[in-house]
Length: 231
Ligand SMILES: *Cc1c(COP(=O)(O)O)cnc(C)c1O
Image 1 (spheres, rainbow, N blue to C red):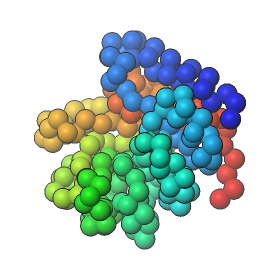
Image 2: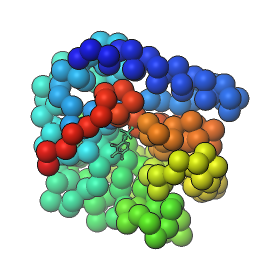
Image 3: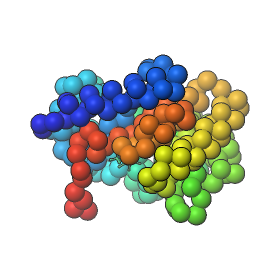
Image 4: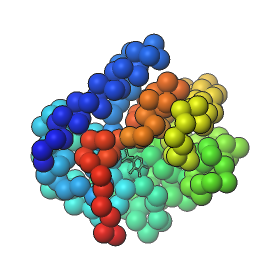
């Protein structure tokens, strides 16, 4: 897995630089290494270089890696869309879920979470770019879904997640992240200090996301290389 430690270091350096530019402490942003489509060997190469948190989009692929690497004390985030018939393996194996967009899914995750594992950390996905994306709740619907998540016993509401429409222009990247920050800050007054996570920014737009307050950036190809899908 040549190149992974070097690319991971470059991403970490870019996070530190963006934090400095934003006058935020470097520790304010966590890197989630998105390992979807890459094997356990790639995850191990990143883990050996100090990376702890990994993101997966496909349930079976993620569970296979979690089981193969269970002795390595890693933290696993499910970041893909969730089908209601796939909630159980997510609840039983992952530490975080980023893309909750329906109360029914949240209820199932809570019911199926083994209490011995402690609460599952949950972010509500917001459709911040409007018509162009189908995933996530509208900004108007976020508060009521967040309230529903916060009431569930085996979930811990942590914040918001978004995947804005891709844009090359920096100002165009920044605008939806700024809207997310506003929404996040308003809801934090209601949900309190546990509501501490703004999951936004990927390989191509992580600097814009950090300048607008991201606390987790989800970065795949900049660490692991280009993906080839066989799904
Ligand atoms: C694949 C994926 C990422 C990482 O994307 P890159 O462009 O490879 O950094 C981040 N978030 C989600 C939800 C993804 O599906």
